Amino acid sequence: MATIVVEDCPDLHIRSIITMVIGRTMRQIKQLRKGLKDVMLWPLLTSRPDVVPLLFPKMAGMQFVPQMFLDKITWPVEDSDDDEELDIECKCRITGFLRMFIETASSDTLAQLLKFWVGWEMLPPELKVEFSGGTFPSSSTCFETLKLPAHYNTYKDFEEALVAAIDSAHTGFGLV
Image (cartoon, rainbow, N blue to C red; front, side, top):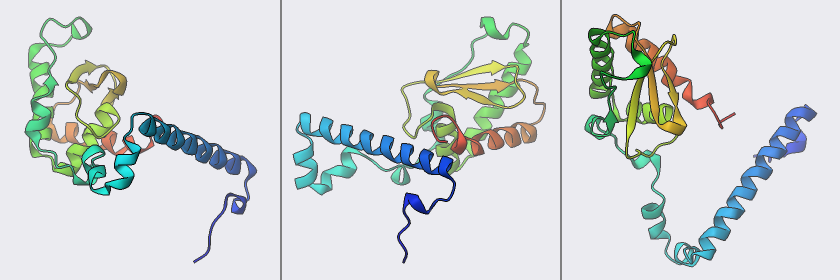
């Protein structure tokens, strides 16, 4: 087992990026530890390791079911200003495709959808859906909004595009 150090990277530019990321991560960890000490949680966490999973649940242990999503979704309303050119039939078709996707998705796929939709693994109080003029589904994670193009005529096309968009979430904002 060899130990790898930053100096093993021959590219000086990449080495500086690695050093910057590690430094930023270490500062964040130190700030988190300081905050936990300030509110007196650090002593509890160090003396009672069994409490850690209760306060910081792991994503791997979370099981998502379709109803968890469907209960939180705010669907587009008929009188919305940003989708005046869309007829009611189109809106119903696309929202129906999304509902079908959610209802038939596995827990892992729902977790990936959530990560794409809001940027992290915890369900917010509300999930919003809007229509967009784009080619692929996109999201506005700050506003917890999934933006769906309305040009899909079949569920298969919709599903392929949404899966492709979801699969790109691991290289999204803040992850590079």
